[in-house]
Image 1 (spheres, rainbow, N blue to C red):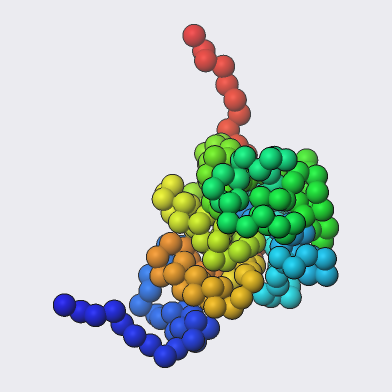
Image 2 (cartoon, rainbow, N blue to C red; image 1 turned 180 degrees about the vertical axis):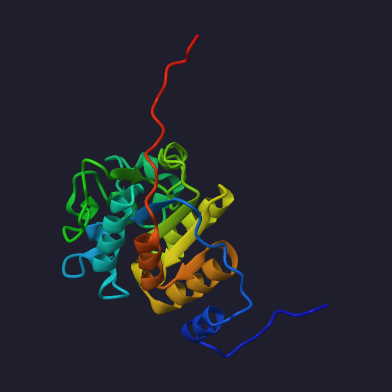
Length: 237
């Protein structure tokens, strides 16, 4: 019976190996994408204020702004998520029971500094959807699945954080819902390089295409633009 393969590679080194594998088939881009930017809120991006914040690539925010701009230009939906909970944290459920400090997940409250989307983000409040999610996957108990159906997308592009948490969970759910899923490498981040690179490997090998930012940017730039969403029509009885 074959044993588990062993290696002395670090997660970063293993990621380089996985990324360079020419035999790994890609899911590829479809015809129309939705860009979902996950939990880019100050609790996780404001390094000067919150100990829960992290940064993996210095240009992450700028790259996400660029992809969001291109998605809008091409008539594709842009969605931003953030986490925030009720005052009693009931909607965090069992996820909010492991710790209870001022920095704990379930103590991110609506309209608090920790729940605010990063001020460096360029958000079109008239066009973009901003969604409060409460669990790891953006698909869980949110109206994002309905938005994707309405916009008739076949591809989901995920950015944000954390790579090992909400990005991974969302990639699995996206694949499970039948979407081609793309993760721009420089646009996701984590608290530590071990979970970051280990989960990039898992995402790439199983659930999504992890592509360089430049590749995703080039796909948007080359796209002719999505047709308008179908107009609502009467029942016609």
